[in-house]
Figure 1 (cartoon, rainbow, N blue to C red):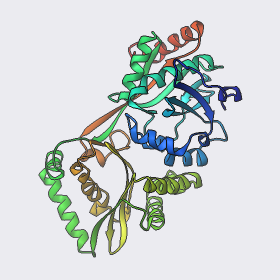
Figure 2: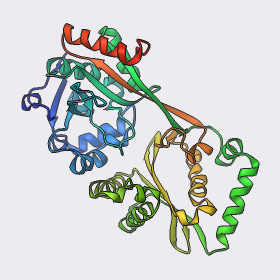
Figure 3: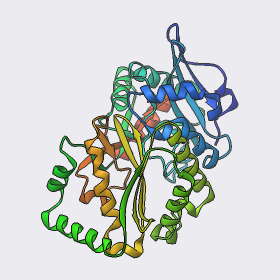
Figure 4: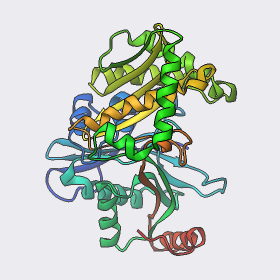
Length: 379
């Protein structure tokens, strides 16, 4: 359900000179240079809401003009950005609500905000939602980092306003955060027996031909590399299940454009494990210092006995040696069978619902929140 046309007009939530907030249709209303500057200065990096990823997401995955951008300005600078949508149902129940817009290949829902304006952005967004709730009962904010500054700012705002809000879902996924060297980290994360087995598999693989690890951070041969990745992923279980990127034209197009955009902005890192020049494991990282995101990986399942995907992940531990990167998000499902054998830290993500509108609407929301959470999930 699209936001009403009236939602897109005037800036709302203007609290003092130099501050403004608006909700506008489509990503083309945001200036790319300002968007890039915001992403580079954001207190919580989120590559999935940067222009090079979100614009192709909206172009290829969004439904018509249903997605709007919530945009904050401070002293003439773009100070906050979050994609929004109205949804008519909530986990199968006919409960209209406002929500951050995401798709299955977006792995973080934190808005891009300048450090000094995070609380202002949440305050203006909630003010706007109060005035433009329509049929929506609440605002749904998925995949916020419970330890991140964006969630902390949201907590302060809802507490200051005595606004009903709660965590309705929590999930954890592997992350890489340590002061150890790659070699030391691996020795603590994996038993000596398993490390010996991986060395044996690498040796056995080398008996088949020339084995090389290749790391790139530019756009050299990028179209061919992307084709190779899509083919490799499609050849495995994801292709058989219809969940590979190449299984649908929109997701394949998103992947192509996002990687080209990331390379242009210096955000892309590609790793490959090659056998006689043929990729048998491939991996994409998005580098948004001081954080990184391990976006996608694929490997040749016909060579699974040599663990090419695991061997490539060992090479990926070099992220620990980079002083500009504090930690790396795996972007993997919880309890991932491969990545959690190496990456031992956890990133805790929460889905938050926030009450909006007048007293009666918030009263109804409080009842729903108690029913959904048992009353034990206040933020």
